[in-house]
Length: 209
Image 1 (cartoon, rainbow, N blue to C red):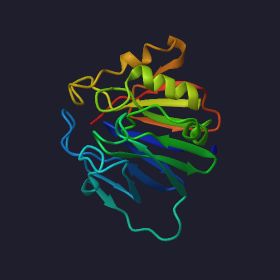
Image 2: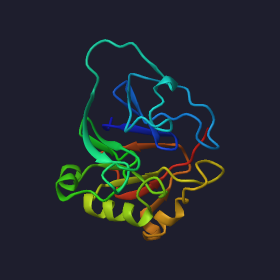
Image 3: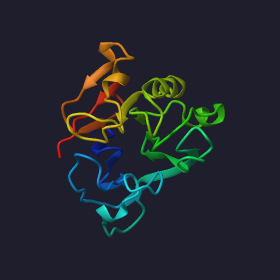
């Protein structure tokens, strides 16, 4: 059996990662327009910052477990805006390693990455990137970040569409439209399975509620 990492989109910027019988949830939310109330179970919860739409830990029931989890987690300090945090504060980028897979969640990144930050993330297997603008980097900036980091798989997040998400955010088409059609994989599901053989792509997930 191939080494698999399952990534499930729970809406907004919230994802559940499952690997080797264990799970973590990152950036659980509360009261984001259109999305139902979030309830989930996981071994670990991570938050990029403490705003209610990213730091609502109460939505996650922590599972009691024995032994060490298969996730190795590192964080990198960034900002929620392009003013050194003066407008919206700090933001943590999470680097999550499970087996041979490395997933990077950019949280509410609000600025271009420095050269050193880019080098730290370069070549990750999967990048979760905000694309809706207004509170974060917009589609054009998101593509510049992706072009610099060069992940194998990109999953856009933190956008508005289909009745879900803050209306001030742009839809995902502004981001996907910057790529060729052959790069876009409209998954048609809320879950993506990453393996060593997964080809380069932009994987657009569908919220299932």
